[in-house]
Amino acid sequence: MRGRRKEFVQFLRIAAGSNGEARALLYAAEGRGYLAAGELARLVASTNSIGRMLRRLIESVERRDT
Image 1: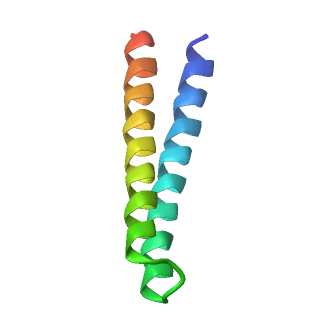
Image 2 (image 1 turned 90 degrees about the vertical axis):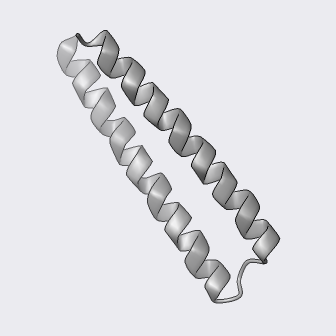
């Protein structure tokens, strides 16, 4: 079971990285005029929330591994 958890945490970290990349692309899209500032704020807030959830899940899974 240990290996499975370690692998799961790795996938969660990849997801967290992808979430950060999506956030960066939102800023780029807003800078090019594809998103209104209000829409950017809403979407960035969503990525921030998702990031917090992923961090908590990673911490929880890692604690169970000890």
